[in-house]
Image (cartoon, rainbow over all chains, first blue to last red; front, top):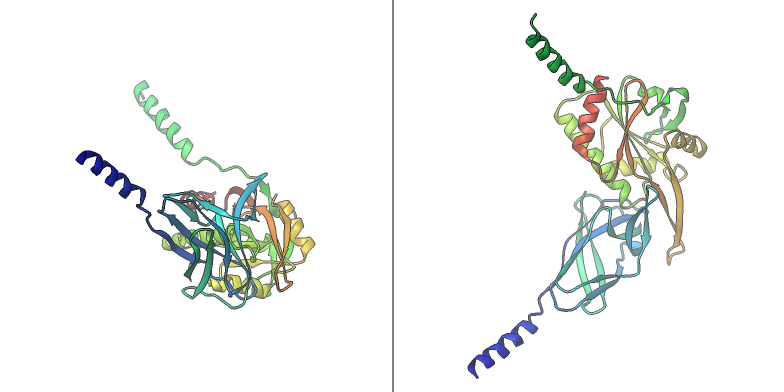
Amino acid sequence: MKKLFLLFFGLLISCNTAGDFNITNQWFRPAVKGMNTALYFTIDNNTNQTDTLFSVKSNIAGMVQIHETFEKNRLKGMRAIEYVAVKPHTKIYFKPGGLHVMVMNLKNDYKKNSSAEFELYFKKKGLVKIKAVAKE
Amino acid sequence: MDFKKIYVLVFISLIFSGCGKEIPVIKDLNRTDYKLITQDSTQFNFPSDLKGKTVVLSYIYTNCPDICPIITQNIISINKQIDKEEIDNIVYVEISFDPERDIPSVLKNYAEVRGIKSPNWYFLTGDKKTVFNLLKDLNVYALSGDTTITPQNDSLYYFIHTDRISLIDKQNRLRLNFNGSNADKKEIINSIKQIKQQ
């Protein structure tokens, strides 16, 4: 009986180890007013649920979209994607040459070491605000 | 001389024959000279103004947020190592395949925001027809992709384009092409040294 209780207690703990959901390593490339830049970061979903990034907003730009870089016929390009799903206990890397947030038509110059705020919208987590620094 | 010595000499000469292996010429660019404009609004004749220099060449558009800045950043790293090793007579050239928008002042901003101040670094633009004839000559392609309209009614555009870093020798001959954004910088630096000797 005691063993059964311990087993049940153990299972209860393991089912509820909902960990953290973090955005780390956020940065964007320096760019000048009117131009585009890319925002990069890591989504660390250490919870037991899949979450989905479906929108990014920032008042520093005319428009912000989630993009991916692709290769076709030995040419490189970018295209908008609607969402990025992050499975439980996985990390998704937004990095140069891959997934990135395209920050279009900047309203000001963003030189090296300047910073900007972005709003990341997830289906489950909701709004996550981040501050990123411009660097190469 | 006995046979043993001859064998040793033949063996050594075989080893060294591979070291100075000539890198093949992809294309001689001397046939046509293209009149372009630098980021400082000065005229630049491509490739005749590069004669006698080893050239690290790439192709970009400044509104590109991901691939092109990676290419430029890779060349910045190559440039730093080349300067560190005190290798002289190397010139860096980035040609815009969006010449209508990438006017000299835009190219200058692109360079300045990345801290590029080297007098040996040219960002080139020019008349659209001239630029595209040159790119065709270099086997570089840039196709207009979708245009996005912002909520402010601004149009945003992309290119699907060649992702490449090329090396041109002192005789204006295209010698090597590398992946640009995913560049093996060490390999490119070694090739620069090798081409410089040829």
